[in-house]
Length: 398
Ligand SMILES: Cc1cc2nc3c(=O)[nH]c(=O)nc-3n(C[C@H](O)[C@H](O)[C@H](O)COP(=O)(O)O)c2cc1C
Image (tube, rainbow, N blue to C red):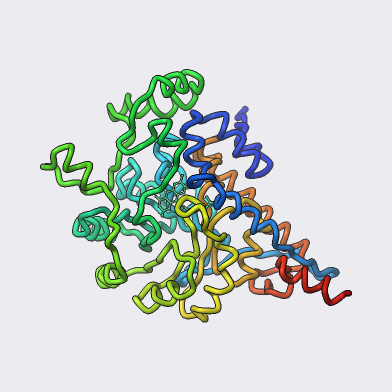
C-alpha cells in the first residue's frame, strides 16, 4: 500500500514551513526564509496582507466555484505563478524540475532563474506546462542577451526581467555563516550535514554521485577562458543598467516580457512605455531594501497608474488563499509565490510543492465560497477593507 509523506499530509503553508525547517540545514533554511538586514520588510509583507479584511456576502449560490484566471491569452487553474528563486537546486535534488512539474500539474506558469543547476532546455522539456525564464544580468550584458536567445530557442513562453537586483543583498546572517559567493566552507556546515541526513543523502550526496560536484549555475554563460579571478568579476550584477537595457531586451524577445521588481507607479508606467507586457509589483520577498513598503500596499497605485494597459502581478508574503483574493480585489491579475512552494519543495520534493499549490487552491476556493463568489471577476474593492477604511468607519460612527 502506498504511504503518503508528511509533506503530502500538511494542512497549511505554515505546516510545510515547519517541515522544511526540520529537513534543511539551518543556514540553507534561513537563507530561504529570511529577508535583508533585520528582516523588517519580509515580516511587513505578511503583516500588510493580514491587515486587509474581506467582507462576506450571504445567501448566494456558490456551489460552482471557478478560480481560473487568464494571462497572455492562456487560461490557468489559479491566479498564481511560481516566482523565480535561485536556491531550488540546493533545496532539493533537481528542485527546479520538480517545481516546474508541480506548476504544470496545477496549470499555472513557472519561472526558471539563471542561477539553477539544471540546464534550461532540460527544465523546459521535463517540466512541461507554461514556463517563463528569468536571466540574471551580470557585468557582460552581451552574455545575458545570448542567454535570453538560448531561452527563446529552448521554447520558454515568457521572459521575466528582474530589475530590483542590480545591487547585491545585505544578509548578515548568511555572511557570518560563509553563505557568500563563492561559498566559504566552515566546519559548522559539516555538523549541519550530519544532523540533516535526508537532505545530505537525498540532495548533496546525490549531486556528488551523479555530477561529481555540488550544484552550480548551468544557465549562466561564463566564457571558458576566464581565470578564477576574472570569473569572480564576471559574476557581479550590473549596477549600470537603465531603461535602455529593457528596450534592447524588448527588441530581442518576441514573446511575453514581464518586468519584475517595481514598487513606484511611475516605474510601472515607464516599463509599459518601454514595451513590457506585464509588471510585477515586488520587493523581492523583502530581500532587497529592508525599509521597503509591502508590495500589496502599492498595488492599488500601480493598477491605477497603468490603467489596464498591461496586466499587473504582485508578490511578497502570500501564504493563504485569502491573501491571493485580497490582491485580486485590489486589481492584480495574478500573484507570484516564492517561499510557499519552496517550503513544499524542501519538505517533500515535487509532491511537497504540489501540496503547497493544492493547499492554496483549496483555500482560494473555500474563501470564494465564504465570500459569496463563484468567479474571480466578481471580486472587487467593495468586499475589501483596508486599515484606513476601518478607521474612517469608526470616525463616521462617532
Ligand atoms: C530564496 C529566494 C531566492 C530568490 N531568488 C530570486 C531570483 O533568483 N530571481 C528573482 O527575480 N527573484 C528571486 N527571489 C524573489 C522571488 O522571485 C519573489 O519575488 C519572492 O520570493 C516573493 O515573496 P514570497 O517569498 O514571500 O512569496 C527569491 C526569493 C527567495 C525567497
